[in-house]
Image (cartoon, rainbow, N blue to C red):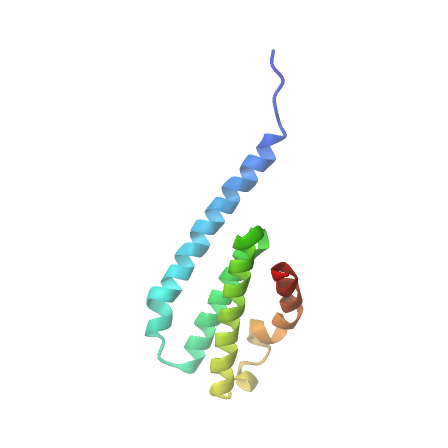
Length: 118
């Protein structure tokens, strides 16, 4: 009787989950880039969609490695910056309050991203 190799089971499962996450995040990012952001008509909706784009790139950065990690981290920062610029341009930051991810969490997440890029 041959021994069962259990070490590959967690690795295989992890790869499967990562592949599924990449597909889901890719679908969301495509919808944002091709439909939602271009169709947004208000500053608030644009901020929401760019913030969402930053979040989904951040999800990808959590498990990406090497140059892929650097690329998605940079994409995340670009999206958050766009959201912040739009919000600032419309004087929305005060009205968005604590519901805005980039106001609350970006200061803690930014150093992590910058370390990833180094």
